[in-house]
Image 1: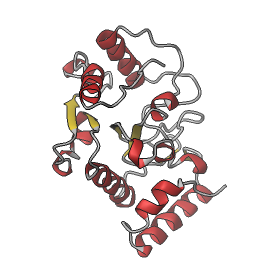
Image 2: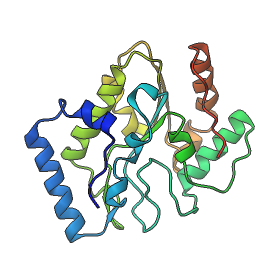
Image 3: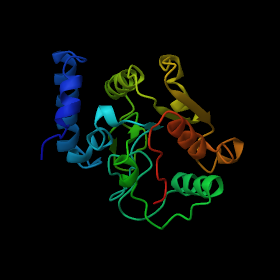
Length: 221
């Protein structure tokens, strides 16, 4: 199975990266997938982009790297398809419930958000099994930084949710006044009580979108 990137994003990115960079990235990925157990599956690496056409982006949520245990990583930050909620996702659901009085289901698949225009972007799109942050390198940093720059340049109103210091490192390149930038602590159990709980990002996001005549996100899962 080859790498899958939608035509929409492929055309946009074709002029943003050199041929040398693209050869280096995909050669490295080929080697990693052949020699190690890598998550997510190769065909899901670019899922965060493939679900959302660039003109339909409403929200960007930035994570760090994919889940590193079998059956969890699905290419969307904080999402997993095996139905086992991870601690950060549990806290995200708790904040949604407190903020919007929405009772969340037991599903951990965030595809419904992606289909509404939410980019769930990890800054490293792959990881070695049982080795968190093992692919947090310059190759992925270059790629995801360029994605954030491209989205920042768009004219449509977009909400960026930056949770934790890693996500906040993108603040210097988010300078478009058309967008709303929301920051808080990370939803991890180690930091959620230091500013993530009570941040009300989900209601603030929908208020912003509605004010700009954009359909709000249905956050219920």
